[in-house]
Length: 159
Image (tube, rainbow, N blue to C red; front, side, top):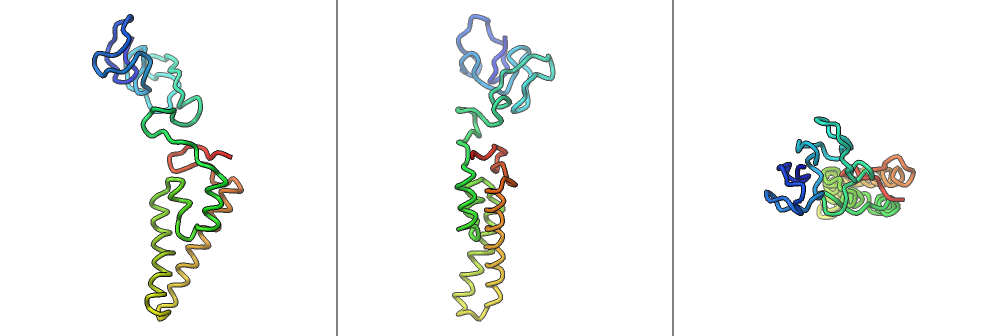
């Protein structure tokens, strides 16, 4: 028997791993049958063929207590944020698409801010801000319509 958390050999009567301190059966990174490292979400060990009983593979998302685990994001919340606040990228921050959200903040927020500060001398920046708003509106509709189905970590959106 091997520790599912660190892959160290364990006594069959052990209650926890003496190497890492994990309880028997706790962990998802190593095969309990051969100790080899397994891919996140794998259902079968590629080295020995043992079934892993990995809840990540069974449910499509990380289980509670696993690093990277998060509560499922609401499809309706993300869609409404996209429609009403999409020009500022709020829906993308909510879903975990940080790079896309920052681009929308820069386009939308700075477009409006610089236009107002310059007393509308730089009025062409309004087109940049408007483009960001349309981008957010379209993404909000796509989320509600089901074209965008996962968050930034690949977890499915909750209906």
